Image (cartoon, rainbow, N blue to C red):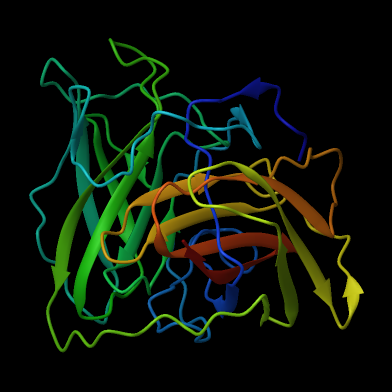
Length: 310
């Protein structure tokens, strides 16, 4: 996959601080083993993946260039921003089985938005995460002619979930603005909370070891490096995924504030690695749960990272 030429520089850079970073394998939720659809990621921290679910209609146009800051997107906790609103009649979804979440984005005129710019090959990035930061899913939903999006979720564990829509309007007063909006839903049942894993600087994910290095301080931007190895040897066959060598998303413990960062390492060919450079800045103190998605041999892997930000 070639590296895109168009920059998107409006989404706030992901921030990270603290000396302890914990990485635990979690199931991928954006792409199956052959990147044909999202797989389920509804298990506890550090568990193995379960069954996959399809995400049809993935838009494969090329859009923004990875590695740039995306300021102004906010923390993703509101359903309305700058006149744009995430609307849905769904407040509950069944637990333990696949389910579809349907929603619209309405503009300042109150009408459904149907034109969206391409960002990292997609017109809509959709995320679902449980209140204890388990069950991460990253999907690319499909849109109907009336502006209704359908996100086909893998099975949800009982509990409260937050659904995030990340998009860029392609017309209207918000044209070119990078937005993240969210709403919550409940999956009924015994919603036992899973604590975040203990801190560590590295951990294994699907046989790969992911290591984070960086002298990070809360509220300021610092370089951060993520290295990938296997069997003690550096991994140099990372494949481009959404026009990057890795996709990184973070959620703040407690309020589930959203942050997003792509590696600044330029995609120059079909393979890359072992080190991925980031510029990281997380504005809030406390624990952040990061989800790093990377692909090798056509298989998408997801590593979960817990960062303590002072």
